[in-house]
View 1 (cartoon, rainbow, N blue to C red):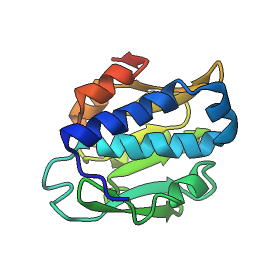
View 2: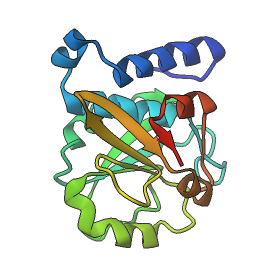
View 3: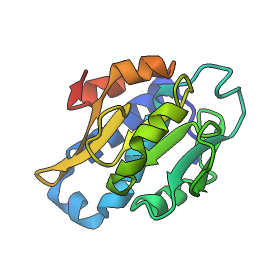
View 4: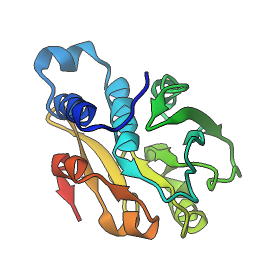
Length: 177
């Protein structure tokens, strides 16, 4: 799937994200939660701008996830897709893997013990941090309430990482701090 941000397909992608944000009962039953969350991560990538030194034109975009993360199988399905001219790769991290080669880092509740170390290691790096758990210090936190997936955004974390989210995406967030 090739995804280049243009006004026409931005509207389509936002509509798709909106459908994921507030799924109809049939959609919610037909699509597993982890696949929906992986779709959110994909759309976060589409609507995020990285500085050129962090993601040069045409370079691969790496989504990193620690071994055993519940979203790992669903995220792996994003491999080889295109996001704004960048081929997506998914990398499973081991214990002491470097995080600076990632453009997106997805953490879940089992990674809680790593969060303070992750924040220290990523200080000043342009990595979009996404948590599948409400977590302080993450740029975007996914969560499920009333059988609906939503997300919260921390602008201070995004500014520190020199990342910009589209205002269209920010309007879909439950909260923006």
